[in-house]
Length: 207
Image (tube, rainbow, N blue to C red; front, side, top):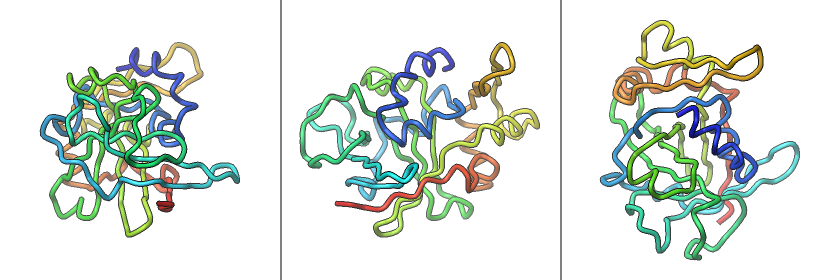
């Protein structure tokens, strides 16, 4: 996972959601749901806008038109585009959404996010990160993963996982969480220490 994220760091500039989801490098070896059986959350489809450093940033989430990917996979890319337009997956983050049913998760959706732009990575279910989201009419709230919270959860053995620390003092650790242990934690807590208000991005629907 660490090597894959390092190789994909060039994608940081492509889409605001990718920048914030990647920050901190928390991921899973396998997605929260098998992309082959996942059902796309149609509420996410559209053009969304958010403010970043005083500027409007646009993100289009749409189905992967004309690709060989399963129908449950959505693509997110920077900018505003027609929802039925053809595009290359190379500069996209790919979302595989999952509903985790429990009283603690009511209203929330969760998405595994693939960052390479390579359909093979999705089909083989290798190396994804994840986020939590909430859609309320024309508002999309998206929580990226809190690195410090994930680190504490692994250290306290509340979630199984491994922590790889960088050489030297600079940089955040790379944290790989066991996907089944993570799902059990999400069912109990709805996210708990994995998500915080500082990790929240609020989007408004443009179209």
